[in-house]
Image 1 (cartoon, rainbow, N blue to C red):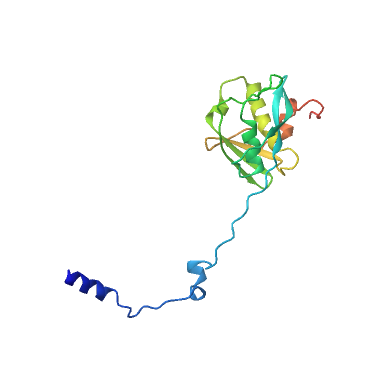
Image 2 (spheres, rainbow, N blue to C red):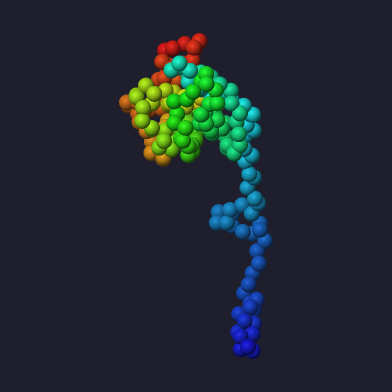
Length: 181
């Protein structure tokens, strides 16, 4: 036991040990000694407009926006996914579809949904699903003008040549009273 104490005591000598203050640390190696300010998330409104379906056309509907969304676009898609409780409006999006992620770069949102979004259905029904997402995200106040879609992380080509889609691409589903292109 005395040998262990002697070895430990010898290892703990302070010879050659130099203590540096935070200001003496090289910033390019260790970074700033001060904490980086944390960005506060944007304040989300309590309600938002999503686009549901009525008579094979889009219909704006106000829904509650629930946390834990990190952004308005994410909150809007989360509000769009639960099936509507009304019999007057419905959705073309399968009930078990989940949101993986919404990324916004400039004015283009990339929406990554679960594979259930691709569920079986005729081509017009599949286009109506995408139109619901596009119209919901490109509404006033989001600064988003176009949308890309990914399924479980795999980008989907919605147009040829591949480009983000806009409301103009789905104008045939425009709500009553909105101009069709």
